[in-house]
Amino acid sequence: MDATVERGPKPGDPFLNEPLKCVVECDTAYASADKRFEFFRSWHSDIVDVGLRCGETRTFKAREKIWQLGDCALAVIESSPDHLLHWEHKKKPVVDHWLVTVKSAPVAADGTRRRKLRIKNLLVRDMCETEGAIIALFLPHSAVTAPLYPEIADGAADFLADYLALLHSNLPHLQQGNVSGVVAAITYMVAATLVPCREKLAEAQAPIDAVITTRTVRAIEARLADPYLTPDHLCRSVGVSRSRLYRIFEPAGGISNYIRRRRLLETRRALANSTDGRSVSTIAESMGFMDPSTYSRMFKREFGLSPKEARALGWQGVQQPHWLSIDQPADVASTFNTLLINNSLGLSMNTT
Image (cartoon, rainbow, N blue to C red; front, side):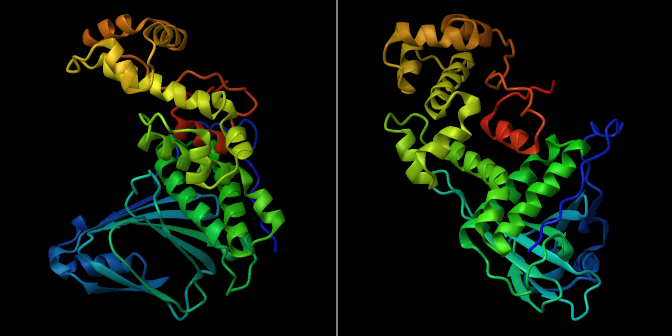
């Protein structure tokens, strides 16, 4: 199986720093109530037939945004959860594409989220039902040459679902210069999912790392104040080895250092909140810092001011940066995967 990736943009391209923009945006609000659903159906009439299994056509509302990513297209379709949509591939679709759809599930108590992913080729007759919001990726069949009825790797499919959701959340931060990296990451992930093998999984390693980072950050946020939150717990929760977790969080000084910094940041937010009248020591203890003097030293080393000074500035309404100022090597700051990881961690990017 081959996975073809588009070449990067030419040096000196004046549009590299331009923000990535939505190329198509449709909204049923532009149609009269009695024509909204037919208007929605027309958006996909050459690719799939859409029916309404549940809900009234007169109350139907939907919006769709599409981003062009090289030869790929990423669409986000939002409709009312009260309407059950039936999707069926056309007998003779106008394009030969892989269609990857992702449907989100609620966030669990441990911060994880299970997403349902489907991969089908538009040339294969297929049908499904959805409600609410979905992410749809259209990838040319030639980009990943796999059988029309491939064996799907469940583990890789989970990573691909989370990666597409992560990509969607980061679209506002992307620039045109990121597109080649986006296409490469997507192609490797789809290839690893459709025809799993050691080689394809290795190629998809960078985007998989971004997904692991996001999962880990969610698990940390869910139990940030828990004194029993340890790297071993995170390894079990996220399903990765200690060595891999440590390698991924190396830019943040290691996983333990990241947790400590996140807790310090949380105490700084509380100190800056004028409605929070708790003492400095009480706020520190709520995040596991039991020794006031040690906490004060760590806080000042991290933010350049004492907890009392941070509280005074916050109560005066002085805005402070919301990210953690961790220096990044310049040679990794330009990659798309690093951008995703830094956004997930809440780190500022070194763009030099």
